Structures are given as C-alpha cells and as structure tokens.
Image (tube, rainbow, N blue to C red):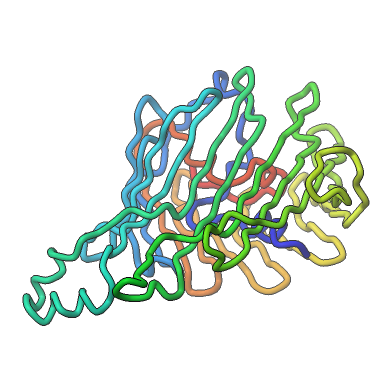
Length: 324
C-alpha cells in the first residue's frame, strides 16, 4: 500500500485526527462547548512533551511544546494567506555542534544549558485553502532532522525536506466529499539543495448511500507530473456498517475493524496493530493510545476551536475519533 494511504488512515503523528462530524461551511459551523487546551504525551520525535494551545477569535493562533523540565521543544505559529491560513511548526534545536556543547558543559557544568544557542527549524507546515468559506485544498509539508549534523566547518543542522502532500477536494450538492485528488511528493535524500522529488498522483472517489460512504475507489495516475484524467484503478475500499455505525473498512492491502461503546469508537484495529480511545464524562477524547508506546492525553477548556484541521479532511470518511 502506498505511504500516503497509511498516513491518511493511521491519523496524526504530531497532531490529532480530524473531526468526523466537521461541517464544511466555516461560517455556519456549530459552536463547540469545549476545545483542547493542553495535550501531554509521548512520541518518537520529542519523547515526553506538553503541548499548550492559544486561541484568537476562536481560531488556533499558536502552540508551544515543552518537555517536563519546561524547556521549549517547538513552537507553532499561524499566518493569513490570500485564501486561507498557514500553520508552521518549528523545532528549537542547538545551533552549535556536539563538541562545542561539551566544551560549554566542561566550563560551566549544569549551568551550560542556558548558554547553548538555539535555532528554529521547520518540522511541519499546513496550508488550508478556502473558496466561499468551504475547504477546497490542504497542503501538508513534512521535514526531518539530519541523522548527522557534522561538526566544525561541516556543521549543518538545517532540516531536510521529506514529503509534501496536497489534497484537492470536490463535493456534491449536499456538501459531501465525493472526490479527493492527492499529489504526493517524496523528496530525494541527502542531496545538496534537497529540492528534487518524485511525484505520485492519486484520485479517491467515494460512493455514497445518502450521507454514508459505502466504498472508495482509489486511482493512480499514469501521468507522473500531469493533472489530467489518465488514471487506473489501484484499489477499492469497502465500508461495512452495523446499526448505522462503521464497523469495518477493507481492501486488498488494508483491514480496519472498529469497536464501540455506545456510539463512541473505543478501538480501531489495523493490520499491524491497534489504537485505543478513552473519553471524559462529556464524551470528548481524553486519551489516545497508539499501541507502540506513544500516547496523547487531552485537557479541554470552554470555547470553540479548530484543532481538527490538522489532518486531511478525507479522514472524516473513516470515522476516526477527534480532538476538537
């Protein structure tokens, strides 16, 4: 199975899954009673972390990520574009090599930490684009740290481009997502300017029964850099329901099985593992366990927010639980 499908179905690495009841019209979106204010967790990139959110006029304005010693790990900021919003998440990393850091510790001992200069390096960015207040495109850019930053004159801690995924959305007259075109760019490793990439183009077409997805046909373009309709069928996803609840998504290379408590998804079993969910007394997610030692624990505050925008809108069709 192609990598973008894994990212689509497995949900967030750094951020949370999108809201399965998300309204497409921003102006008419119902107000949430609560919004996420803090996430504590563990992942492979930061280890143990605490993430605090700041909102402005009901829109996520910034995020600060710290470790349990209260040292800053990363900061996310937002900025307006011609047709939407862009979010940029920057790691804060040492701007001197390991040898220089060791010399500071040799000289100042434990106080050396405050003398290490830091620099911001973009780890992730998201651009959401709207037309008539409807989300029509999302672009996700994923960067990565170098495995070896070198030392002395060869010191280079600039992050490398890893992947860019652009989603283009089309809706029916009831605002249901029916087509999602995906442009996936995988950047070539360790070249000097890190600007070359290989592109794959997909089209996901949904079949609906009312507002319920019954299947998704995934097409792969034979035209590497084109945007035409020269597609061939790559796979078909079948959606199974019981009492109106999605219980299974299956295709040639993937099998998802859902378990519920009432109408809340409490686990999603993948081909190679299981993700589990816990909820608070108001029915909002309070913990996600990713099954590999990584987890998120969520605290909320009163108010409306838009944290659900940090994963592709296409995930809404897979009924993955959301952080608001």
